[in-house]
Image (tube, rainbow, N blue to C red; front, side):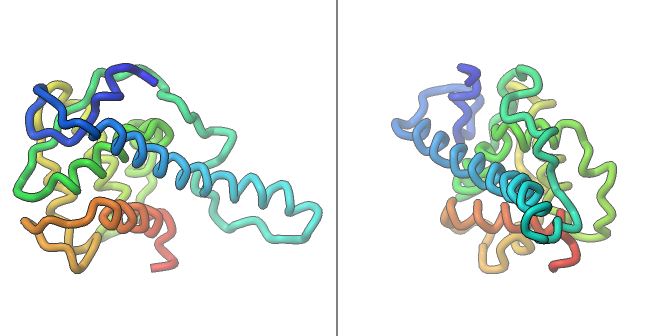
Length: 188
């Protein structure tokens, strides 16, 4: 609950007046992402506890070990870069801000652990998000364009059109799904 992180909203300028209500939208999406992440981890914990009693097989791959999961920031960061509105991309920018400032995911991405072990030859949403998060924190106080995500918009959601207004919640769902598929390439 770092005070500077509460002001992370979609804005094409690094500073200036915020629109009323954006903070509550950020908080809502942050809570949604946190619950999605915790849900994935709690299933693993549940299966581990049930395995010995029920005979349920453990998953072949555990994405995030619950004992290594840190729900708080591993260290305090300066507020990252703002995201440039590249023409009706505020929906995309707000979702990226929420994902970027979700501590368990950001902690993992900042270690570069995924890219060290990724064997995906083509599109990998986890690699794109890792690069995005690294760029955000490397450019504190500046404005950056989320080019990695924009270039792959049609891969993330085939029906999304660059330059069109789109639904933020729908983009979030497609992005989280693409990240999950990057971690589990056998289910593509």
